[in-house]
Image (tube, rainbow, N blue to C red; front, top):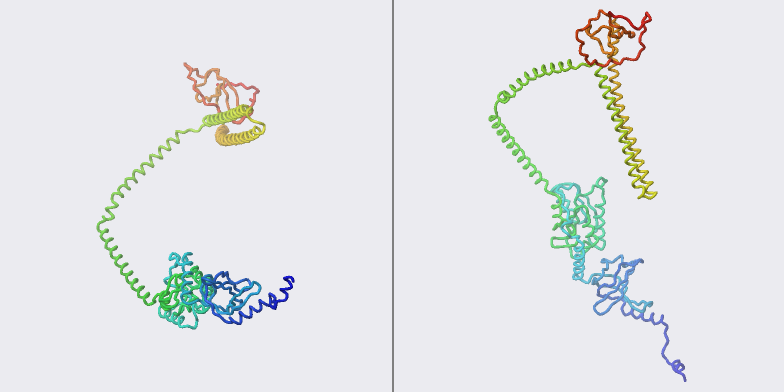
Length: 536
């Protein structure tokens, strides 16, 4: 016989994999229907996206898979945390898909006060390492708050004690945010209240508080565990409003006490810290006011006495003003004489200065020469600049290629054009100034000419010699001298006759001022048809 035939004749029953798995599941669930397991949480990463939580319980020798269904997880008083020692209540079952067993947890609680204290110390070390408890981050409490916010249970004795103490010390506006102060949602509700007060605007319908008090009565470590919540500690540390922690009695410590700006031993102590005593303030203010009035009075008296002493030491006003008054009188007399002398000097200088057509003509000639000189200099400078630039361009022509030469040529052309424009503007401005001065002098000369013409219109005549100089005296006329008689309407020529005096010695010719240039006009023809006549 073959081995197959021998094995087919055995009496052992055959099971499928599903049958074996089902039998094991029933056996385990019947034997361990309700168990309490103590162990340390391992592999916890928070709830799954489905809401269920998967982790393991372990000790120093074994490991047990655990699961918390979504509905049970929301009812847990404590949230699982990595490394936390807990006591899990539930039932054992198997998972056929992986041939392993696990505990389905119905309730989860810490494994005694030692575990809670270990967890608290671990949180405390971690938050302290982040700097949340650093004293440098603490805020100062306002001395005179206007609005105080209280986060506590609205039905306990804590809120009544706080309100009573505030009303006795300094009545002001109090806002209460009701929360649960015990249970699994206590920490989240208090954190939401802290965030809510910080989110209030300054000018909103609900006034933004100046001080925030988080208060609760005493209790065990489990009762105060909500105030050890990490999210609540972070919210208190990040609050822009100063926070006073008044949780438990003076011997009770929580994480919020370390994160708050000020810790109060009791809720009543928190009220005393938050507000001053109004009666004490009024007494202090009255005392300071009286001291201020007395101080001001004494200071005024001292200043008055010092002023009187200084006044007795000062000389009389007449003595102080005697010397300045005398100096003022002397200066007044000198000023009057100085003004008279100055006026006489100015009058003499003005009388000495004679304005004549010859002076104006001379100045006009000087201005014209200056203008011509400046024009010639500008032209010479332009020609020299052009020649210098041309020589420079010729010198560098051999060293440059076509493109750089073109660029340099364009730049030089621009500079040359700019220089030419500046030179033209300068010449034009200079010529304009000289033209304006010449026009003004010409107007003045025309005025003088009109005055001379008015004299000739009254019947007078000008006698000029051959050189065009003005003949002022009869002694200056010689026999046979050619003369020009200038009338109002023209000129006539004449020759001095025999009756003219002949000086024994010819007078020394004096340089005559140039004849004023009148407007060109045609000389009047003599009525007798001749241009020559005899004066004497």
